[in-house]
Image (cartoon, rainbow, N blue to C red):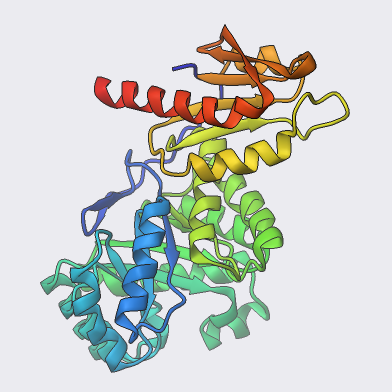
Length: 366
């Protein structure tokens, strides 16, 4: 398989924790997660959405548990999905205990809003007894009152101080199976906070730009924020938070990792924006191919270039390539070598067949 050269990112070595069957931290792959937006009490709808999220390539999924019926619904939900479920808990410690007892493999909590130490101890005890990890979730919008008074406004130092305080709460109870996040909707604040936290602790970090916005704006903000941290070697798991279908969060998260050479999954398409030189409709072709090749999980690179200006050069660096030619005669490249001419109307079917063939060959080698 042709491999494009990329910067070798030196990830920071963090401690390894277990979230169900997924290991987070250390040399383990950076995991991608999303969060359901169904009512958790609607068990069938939640299971269906989790399975779609998993199929898109998520490693973990978070489910909100605002009430007792939701936390108890996890018992049936976790039996019918193939991905570790994280329970999102706020304020009520009993929801965390119920979630751990009903199959959650991680509890997303902010110890500061759970209650007194006795309640926190009960939550940690339930987590230990049920092999359940924890994510300390610090958010710029819900900092502790005394910390906010000290710093006057959310800032990197405030988020990190809150994280350190909560880390100590768990460590004092000999609980170490946890990861941490320090999220903000502000890209610069998030980046600075994560960098400071990375210097201050070796626990695995969950990355995110919270409340990032709609699909386009949220994807851009997340790509800038998460990409900057990942390039620094910071981050062990991530979520792209969008006001959109959770499946799209996973798609963008995987694309961020793929663009940095940190994950190889599925078909990576290199395509031109198209111009008057294009010999076929590049944009439409790429859209169709993305849909028809979405079932491919094997890492394969594919170039779709509308003319010969950059086409041959891109094809030399990809497993499969199509370069636009004159009079509807386009050139197919296999492993960087010219293979055969393909008529414009046959491009999609030919490319799909070659990608599926390549995927089968690579799978047989494993």
